[in-house]
Amino acid sequence: MEKMREFKAQPLPTGSPDCLPTRPYYPPTHPKPFALLTNDRGEKYQREFYEKVRKEQEYIKESRFHAQPLPNFEPKIPRKPECPPPTEPIGFFFFTDTRMEERHIYDEHRRFREKEAEEQRIAKIREEEVRSAEEIRRLRADLVHHAQPIRYYSPINIQPSDKKPTRPISPMIGEKRLKYIQMLDNYEYSSRDSLYDIDNIDDIISNVSNLDFLNQ
Image (tube, rainbow, N blue to C red; front, side, top):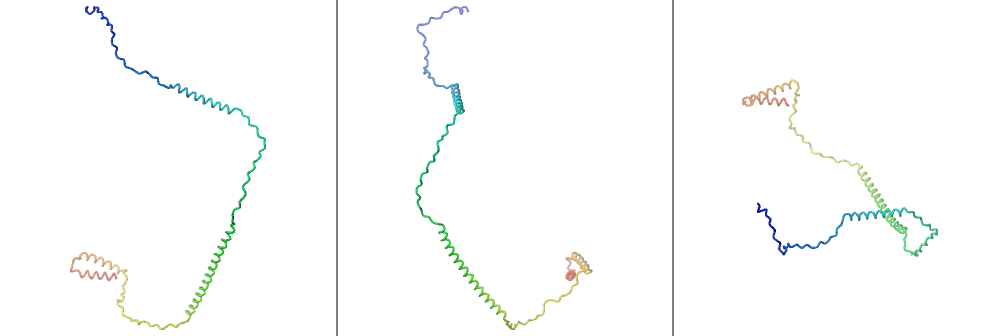
């Protein structure tokens, strides 16, 4: 502990200084132009101010009194028009000449149509006269009496009829109708019971014939 507390002097420095580390090379700083917002605001304010001053000057100039100019009392002399060139005659025609030619053509066509119509009318009258004369001649010929010739007909051959004589049948009313219904019921029961009975076949046939007779 005591040994550690003893004073120990530092060694003297040598005459040669310590080597400094190499310093890197930096190029010199070149200033660049820059714009401040204050400059922009200043320019904007100046423009608005000059515009406002200009409008005020124009308003003052317009509101300033301006006297009307003196009227011109000299008489106004109209200018003499220029002389037109001499008139040159040109060819012309009247519409009356054109209408006259058209009228002549129309009259010719109208006369031709009237002539054709008259010829057709005369021909039709002649045809009507000829047809009337022919009709009168035919009627006169038809009105002349002509005796009818004697007609000869084929003889009639009368043959006897093949039909049977008509047999009268009384209508089915009253007792006949009741008998028919009763017989029909008996026939139904008997035919149902003895449908397959060969011995009763004659009775069934007779009953059927009686029914047919009553139906007539």
